[in-house]
Length: 354
Image 1 (cartoon, rainbow, N blue to C red):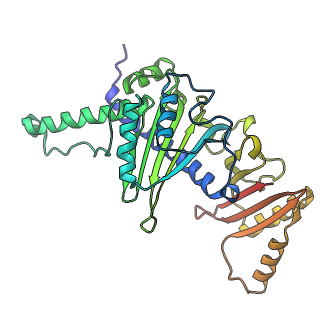
Image 2: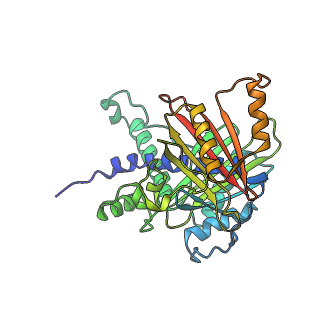
Image 3: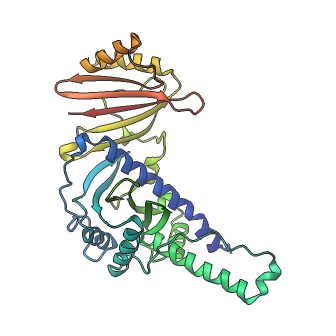
């Protein structure tokens, strides 16, 4: 009979935490920096009453926690075929004060089993195996194991634990399994019994951060979370899925692979971003879009033409990045291409909006 080392599985599970944080951080950045004019339509449901939330679920309790911080109504977005929600708020409290208050609220609402206000260090250093025989050293390891287990239990059972703490910035993340496991060991038992990969075992990811720059008076709280039908493989570059088609209005560049698609839903369905990576030179990429977009009925925007002429005349200093914009029937598209710095690759962002 196969023996399963759950301690090793728990430690390896931290990798999922890092990947989930990365996913949500990217979503936050895209929404923050590319939303039209900083104004977007809220999702139909409010934080307090989303149709997907069962009354006693941790999703509902998480929503209650956000409401306690006066978070705005959530906005729904499609990211690589996954539905994610975004909400934010500002506060006078520092990021560390937000962390403590948020963790307290999570416990009160039954999302977390206990408060987590620091990131546990790596395994305690022990000079030798003989040293473990000393009561003080063995207690140190025992306390570390208990605390780490408590963090993992909350992370994998729908709670949130700190994953980044630095001056002016904190971030928390957590996951819920498809079987809604109550602790980390049950999460991995469920994963093994169902013969799923670690990522395939997750049905919800949540991410909350609080940041404040030294010259700012307010702290910004941002929350990003998925619905309960998360498919993490859709976030992988080059995901081979028919339901992840790019926009028919703005094509992929020749020989490029898609890294990300991100777009609004409902009233914001016409807002979207696609990101591609290829090996054509930046100038060749822009020339491709000049031809391809005009062949599809798009016209170069006046500002784009002026900027190009100024660059050709040396009025604007040369730049590694190139930008070109188009319009058609009241819609706009902007293409930004630049060297990615990775093996001669060119990264291309295509933004579409009404």
